Image: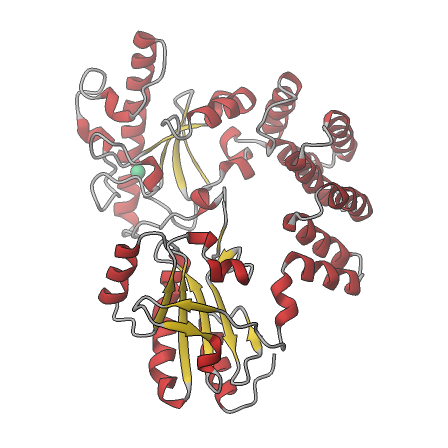
Length: 427
Ligand SMILES: [Zn+2]
């Protein structure tokens, strides 16, 4: 799946982290050993701090120097930068720290809520500097145990409990005690584990109990129920659920996307297509003339699609803050340089809000094509006009003004541009 930034992606902060460099095997074993010792020392310091203050530290730097004399314990030897947690959201404001502290102010409320159900086995401090094929994160639990897990341990809680049986027992007890917890991902996790150990009846009972407590206006809860039904392969029940949800929130594109999946599985190709169009109305534009826009470009000149008629045009919705857009830029530039003299051009529609940052980027990266910038981000008039909900959105438009695709990305871009220039674009 390609990385894409959507409006308000909640999970993006959980998955968009870079991997550290990989060391030689012996060195990396040694690093894990040292990191494990660090984590245990940090764990001790945290508990001493908690005992004294009646609460956890706000940041790990609060431990230094009273509870943690040696600040080097906060640096993992695999951390090439000597004090960065990889997740920038976890960066300690006071001093170099390699570790992600799960109770930092940003996560504290969420993690405290999670702990009610998952208990003290869940991670308290995490190191992401050893990521390789075997595991992604080295963790220290609330109960001071060090173990390896995937990045999103919530999706594989058995990694933190050691066995499936133990995980089932813990989650079932947690759910019993906190049935109304805001944190719902453990419901599907438990259903998955029940299925894994062939306890389908328990899975059914859990789903039924969940359904009984589910309030009609809890949209997110309905999606969680949908996840559980999907695990049980109950497509007909899912269809019923999401059809009802569609009546309730008729503009919800996530509901439409679910209905696409369900109808596809049920073999209803036509309905699947209908919902695909509802989920992404711009699909209907493929093969049709793209309505014109008019704006002022970054140099103060009027710009419209009509000015480009006769050329193959990439109408590129992007922003400097959008990682996947920036990752795409070298490809876009290479295609531009190869085909600009043959009738290919690009119009950038920037969803940035910081004009200086945009101008700096364009200058530093030597980007010559014209840009439209309003400073209003997602609310930029051109982006609004074309219902842009996610970027990068690279719309490739044919010489006659018809839309070839709105996903002209990666290797596909050059092929599509070359074909369109030869006058034989196949949608
Ligand atoms: Zn480490």
